[in-house]
Length: 153
Image (cartoon, rainbow, N blue to C red; front, top):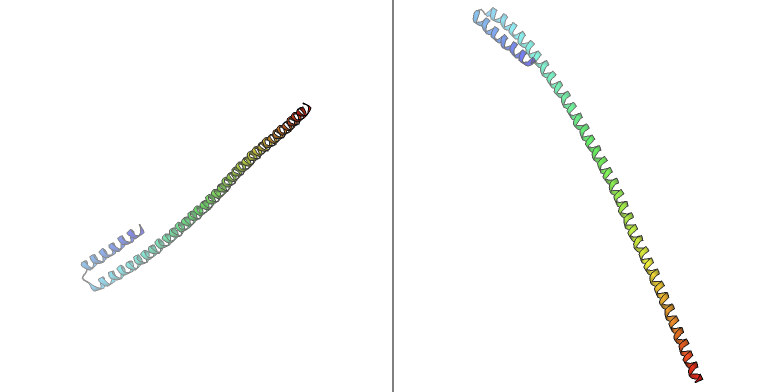
């Protein structure tokens, strides 16, 4: 907006200078008009320089703000990623502990079943030994009775 206004004034100054030169063939008039035009040009150049500096300043501030926003966003993403990784690690730890507990429960269950089977087997072996002992004892008693009966006959 400022640039357009300055360009307009510069164009107008050129037109005035040309018109004055055309109207007066007089060199003095040309020199006077030329100095007016030159001072107007210097004023416009100063305005244009000021406007350029203002634009650069605004751009610089905008760039710094944008960089700050990007830096903050990256920091937030980094923090979110760190939180997500921590949450996943905790979840993995919990799942690993649960799996270890399940495995231990299976192992203890197998051990208990093995102990029960061993007890049952020991009981059966013991009963079998008892039965065999009884059978031997009965066989021995039978043999003694036979011998006794033979001895009496």
